[in-house]
Figure 1: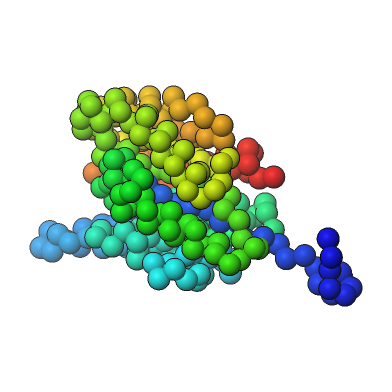
Figure 2: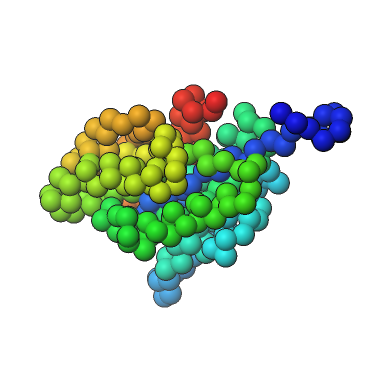
Length: 255
């Protein structure tokens, strides 16, 4: 490989490692989101950032305007705009990975609360926006590389038996499509098996755990602590999930 002048003066630039965060509300983050009061039932984020989710100059976030900026909670504030966002797993994941890898980490938030798997099919707005944001995050920058897609979705597919039955095929299609559209045929996918849901949650969990494709690993969120709504992970659980996702990434894909 050719270098300009003395290699000591021009050390090779460390690649920015990019991670796509996608799915629905538990990926977007609802940790620390509380009701204002009985008189004003609107929700707000309490602003509490655990140390594991602290900002760091080496952790960047691809914002809604398609620009890189220093990442900070709530990561999805300008993406999942119809809901109040709080703590998700993204920052605790990034901080755990940062301690073990050199260079910058880039997070590309794409998750939108309340969305079903059919809304993430190729051609649908959510899917196309995820692909567009992912492509833009590396555009014209040979020092950036998409390393994995972190996916946490499925609660919206647990209220109907039919949705539970077709989930596996739809998720497998999504994996195939996103790899094809990003031209990353072996892109690692780390998906989260649901911690909460409705009547047919076990059907969806079974589908998630039953996906047997190369470079697809499932992290089980079952048992992580939920908020009072019995649907969303609390802040502590989100921090723990971020560490679980990081451990899987570092163990299986950090090459």
